Length: 310
Image (spheres, rainbow, N blue to C red):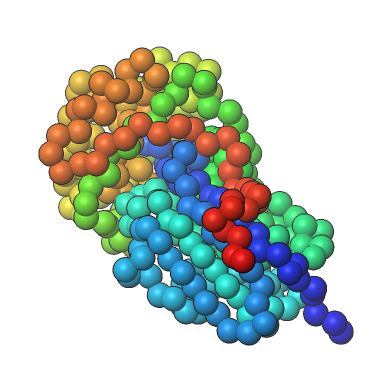
């Protein structure tokens, strides 16, 4: 049986950073924000060549161990076969190990690029299958759902299958991120979580998560109570005490702040007129920035002139 055919031209994929949990929505909520990794992929006659600029340029492997390559290989298997060779150029802007979805971005970029360079790839691997595959590789759907779909997402597992819905955040919402210089491994942060929690804490989180949907999409004035969490953030204090201290300080000043994903980045969910003031509240040791919301999610874009080799 013949394998798949591949496009001769290069493709460019852009994927957004994401913040999962958003306080009470543990392993369910995700928000796509305007900080992007770009990947250009071309099928070559042989071999594997990877160029990396930006985040991870000094540390990421340039071989089959690269997460993006592993995601591409998995997608190519689903699509019917591997190309003879690959040329990959990565422009990385999403910080690694900071709770902004860098691994999900690599996974989504890899499977999107594999589909885009495969002729007929959209029919063989539709959008629902993309989410399934990305979740299988990542292990949970919250970040990959937001990365693929953009906007504000609610993701869940249904009988072993990943599912997600996308909602539009309120137009006035402005995420502000406080990124520390030191990363925290997701596995380390997740390992601090207890196997059980008090029933009263679970009950509070259920109510706050429901309220957060309303706050993020229609009534941002409710963000302060809606971002209260009792399931995961405080348990992670030993891994990121400075981050939890910053969350407490911001919340004491009336700013709806949460740990972004597994941390250690702190995200404030603020509104436009307050965002610049919140940025100035960072203090020493934090790189603070206001970000746009991302509505598009992972996208195949036209090649920029500098992406086209003579």
